[in-house]
Image 1 (cartoon, one colour):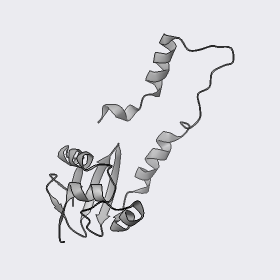
Image 2 (cartoon, one colour; image 1 turned 90 degrees about the vertical axis):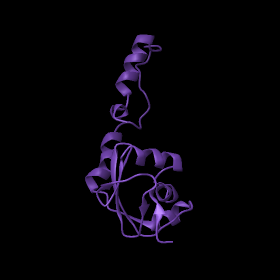
Image 3 (cartoon, helix red, strand yellow; image 1 turned 30 degrees about the horizontal axis):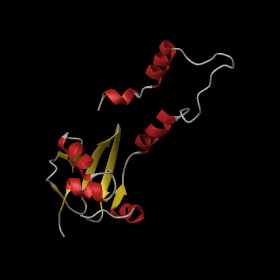
Amino acid sequence: MDKVRIDKWLWAVRIFKSRTLATDVVKKGKVRINQQPVKPSSTVTEGDRLQVQKEGFNLEIEVVKLLNKRVGAPLAVTCYVDHTPEDEMNKYKDWFVGKSKGEFREKGAGRPTKRERREIESFKEDPRSDTE
C-alpha cells in the first residue's frame, strides 16, 4: 500500500469522527498536503505534511504510516506525528478557561425571564460558530 485517499486516512487515524466529515472538510479547502490544496480523492503517502483546519484549530500532521481502515485510538496515534505549534494547542485552553463552572444566580432572584435568558444565551455563544 503506497497511497491512500486523504479523506479515508484522516478518518482512519481518528482526526474526524466519520469519513463524510473528513470528505466535507477536504472539499471546503481546509486540508492541504505539503502546502498544496487537495481534493477528497487526492492521495497521501508516508512523509507527507498535512495542514488541517478543524473547529477553528490549525493542526499540522506528518504521515508516518498509511491506513485505509479505521483502527483503535492507541494504534491510530502511532500513524502520525503531530507538529502543531504550541500556541495553537493552547488556543483551546485559553478559550475554555472559566467555562467549566456551573451557572450562578443570586439566591432569591428566581428563574431568569425570557429576555434575561436570551441575553445569557447570546453572551454564551461560541464566537467561532459564525466562521464555519
